[in-house]
Length: 176
Image 1 (cartoon, helix red, strand yellow):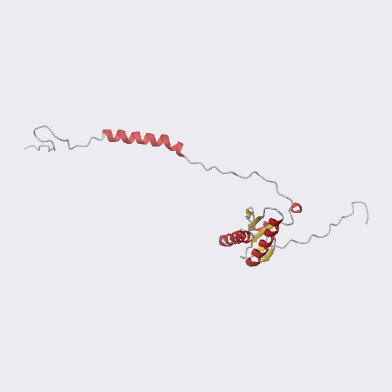
Image 2 (cartoon, helix red, strand yellow):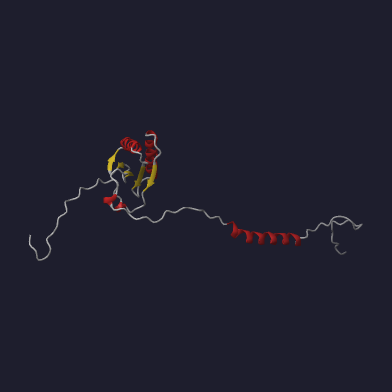
């Protein structure tokens, strides 16, 4: 006896075929693949940002005396205009300076600096303090962030040194 192939086709010849025709499925998958390959490069998203122009560094002598600089030091303490102070005192002095600038018609700008190894939470706390001091002084404060620097270049927590008087040395061949 030979084995007969069983099919789902009834013996009278009419009805559904039980086999799946994969040719149309392959055609659809290939068309979708081609569409995906064509559309993918078009879908790349670009983020538009406005980068600042390269600015010149202002010599230390040209910095305004009323510039407001707050900093987070390496040990977690805070400084206002290079004077180490507790955070509450920084906020009080900052509020007074902001109010004074607002009365003079100036827009207050506060620069925030932080030592490279400072805890991020301390920097955020300092920025919140600056914002709160501006709110208490009824002024909108712009916050400027200082650029990243090496630990040896960070001087915002050290008091400014008094400059020694300039000495002029006599030229060669001349005496005293």
